[in-house]
Image (cartoon, rainbow, N blue to C red):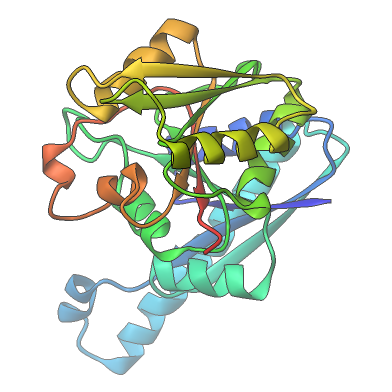
Length: 282
């Protein structure tokens, strides 16, 4: 049985993420944990003088969280859920990241699935602040980011973007293989290069990947870095009609660079397809 954690803020984007997850794991025995976190904001406390009123404020926010989760369960019931799917709700008081870390520490999850809103009105960067912090602070569970307005469609093509500069571990590759097997999909390894020929180290790492993928359909694509890595990947996604993009998050990786505060506003990476981020195993 797979266990899936889905954070929600009760927005339309978060509900779409739940629907996406239900379709992604259709016919797979799953237990979905729907997490909502809440906390009183400082601005709310400033206008609340007495301790009694503060208590009422906390209680009302807690009740709002619990009632919101109950409404989600009702909506799921009305959406004709798969008989193989079970649903649990978690309401926690505290900051989103701290409660997410606590939840993942208490229960082993196969994947966290979170919706992503555009960070700005122009949506130049497709990761919202909560998603950025989740990627930076959760290091023991794959995270599937579902962009705003991304709706489930058959998973046929999975792009795995990598530079082949490091060795790959079984725990890192397993989520990609499972995804491909569940949907009978093709894995397309993408290498964005500035030099067309692989080095000896890259060849060794490429061969190790081939061993992992020997029982599934895969292909290798080497594409030039015609301006930036993100633009090259976006062009590849559009050309081959990729359904899910996968990357491993390790030190100095493209994902690590994407979530670095100093460069966030300088990068314009956006995609309309879900994005699976797998933490490194070392």
